[in-house]
Length: 469
Image 1: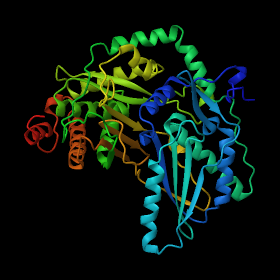
Image 2: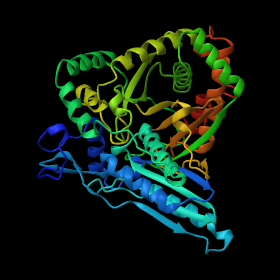
Image 3: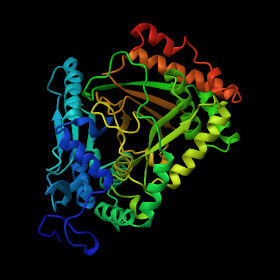
């Protein structure tokens, strides 16, 4: 039962449920920039087939009742935030039927509705902090948009939510009873246990490792940009989608196997090599997410478990690509062993030089999305689901490189701040990344400075264009 604060205490615990330290970081950022939609996480599909909207709504209702984070909001007392888990919340499913419009206007209106849904901010003080927009554009065609604030969800959570919807929907339309496995824990318990663990010896061990690892690190990675950095970021962004050629993907996997490394390590090493070449910097910090779901009781929960690791690499001696890969491998393995220190604690401990227009410690993010295929293939009986490209026009970082690993292909997406970069710049960066990876696979004993970037040197071109800004 809820206590006097409206919070559901976990496992008999009394008092308001604390935020996890990662949640608290987002809560602080929201207080500084109210109404900022940059932390809206989204996914979109086109649904072709006889969708039963009432059944879909009933499935969502069951999952909201089951997953506490979908009923959670945030309040504070004397500046200290806590989680409020409501017993019940309105189901945030909006259905808009556009079939009365002339056919040539439907797509444009659907695009407008989707764009508005994706960029509409959440009020963290009001649950639920997710919404589903369903736009009907034909007799058996819909566009479905799922938008969740990052403070209650992460990438793994999307898969959990979608799989539970699919399982329940399949059971309902086929007349088969579906019993989802019980949830022995909820996210509020994870948040409380995280704070207790970090207050003890484990927290001191983690702080010692990371402060030593990042001591004396540079304050920024200065990518040559198309225009000077604004005093305050607008968080406006765009993304460039690309395909890694099939032959190159096979070569990357072969190099990883020969080097006792993973595809993540090889592609990150390539990204680090590119960043060093185009900036001239040799001490590089890049962020990468970590799931933090290392206990089975957390695997089926919706919640913000993910955090960020800072990967530091030294290229000052112009290593060969194979040597660079070895360094990235060692750094990654050590980082994963020490992954449970929240990024916020690290920033507070290091107290790096802060600027309103730069993220602390790193400004570039690298992500390899390799969720197992069995967790990606979400289907609704009788309905074909086609994943649609992200339409968000926001970016938190200067540059964020996402690679998506599927069974038969490797896709990429380079998200970038439009305060700094124009699309041709990002397209050229993508081409150079692929060229460098191909050359590294062909000759891993070549030094980083000798790896081909394909076209003319990017940094030189920028310095000419911008007068050395």
